[in-house]
Structures are given as structure tokens and as C-alpha cells.
Length: 306
Image (cartoon, rainbow, N blue to C red; front, side):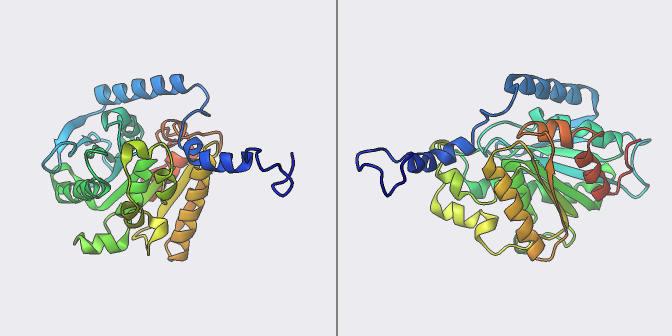
């Protein structure tokens, strides 16, 4: 292939075309093997969790559409300790514009069996909501869970946050020490975080086909990109991504982990072998046999599965 210096002036610049299209390619699921099968397994696991794990379903944490959560609670015999059980708040993905808490309820059974509570939250979806509304909703859910902890035998000092994809981005927002102080939330909340496959620089998303749905503005990108503003996480965290994911997710996960380390907060930076953008949640975080699940358990002070 001729170099750009020797190519005829009328020849298309293939490299430039690839670069222009790169943002679109990074935010599709085309490379996932057996995508339909994964979707079916996820739906089946979620329905099984909703049917067989004790749950307070669609519990309202704030007024308005999308402000509900599914709260899964361990039986008294499984609860960890006598002063309260730890809680994992999970924020689902879907590019801030789709999916819901019910579909991600498969997160709960493995942690509940270990004696933890799990809250899988909904939030108002874009574009009807703006990013500020989405972030505000997640903080409202966190605040609600802290206030309601005593009603459900939850240890208010052991509330952890997790989420995948768009939810991973929202975990980063909830871990921002400056935002937590500004909103008047108590020190030690959250106690830790696990962000899976998060997006911490929203500019590549704004440049992609996804923005035809989202309508992200330059101001939103600047305000809600942890990699584009001063950022200090408030607690230790796990930053992970499937090793088979698109390059942009791999790049942003590494950059976010480095930003948190530079701020002086302990970070466990992982890539999950053999996992993609969907299986990293279903087959790594939710599965008690997997290293990531065990790592989150350890962060929450839960026993390692036998």
C-alpha cells in the first residue's frame, strides 16, 4: 500500500476512514461469540434470581420514573455477623439508555448465599433524562440505602458499589470524593467499589453512533468524564474489564486505574481472561467460582466460597 506521501491525490485515505469509523466499531457487540446465547442465559439467570432469591422488588428510592431498585436480602441464618450484613449496590449497563434492574438481578444469588444484601438499581434513561439526572439518581439510591440500612439489618458502614459498562462509569461518579462531600454524604460511603468495563472518558462515545440516541453535549462530556476533570476516589476499588473486549474499553480501564492510583487510592486493576463485555458480568462477577467474584467478596469482608 502506498504511503500517504506517494498516494495519488484522488485515492481514498483508508487509514483516515478507519480512524473516522473507529468510535462506532468500539461500541458495538459484533465481536461477542454466541451473542444470542449469552442474552438467553442472562435472561434465564435473572428470572431464576427473581423467582428463587428473597427480594423486595421495585422498592422506590426517590420520586419519579426509574427511581426503583430490587433489594435482595439473605436469610437470617446466612447473614454475616450480628451487627448487620454488607451490601452491594449494582448499577446496570446499557449505554445509559436501555435495560433495567430486573435483567441484572442474576448478580444477587451468589452474594446473597454468602450473607450479603444486593441492591440492583434502576435509573432514569437517556435521552429523556440527561446525564446529570442519571448521576443524581444513583446518588439518591446510595443515600436511600444508607438511610434504610437499619430497617434491613444492613451495616451502613459496609455499603459497596458495583456496575458494568455505563454502570461502571456511574460507579466512578459515586466514588468521586469531591461529589460525595458536595452532596453531604457521610465519610466512608461507599466503602469500596468495583467498576466493570466502564467508560470514564465520554468523548469517544459522543463521537460514535451511540450519540445519535444519547445526544451527549461537550459540556456533559467535560462534567461527567472522570478522566477529563480532577478526580480522587473516596475508597479502594477494583477496576476490571474482559480481556476480549474492544480496545477502547481496555484503554479506558487502564487509564482509570492509573488515575486512581495516582490519587493515592488502592486499586486492583484486572483483566478477566476469556471474558467479553457481557460474560464479564454473567460469568465472572456473578459466579462464585470465579476470581472476580471472590475478589469482590473479599473487599466486602465475606468468606471465600468453599
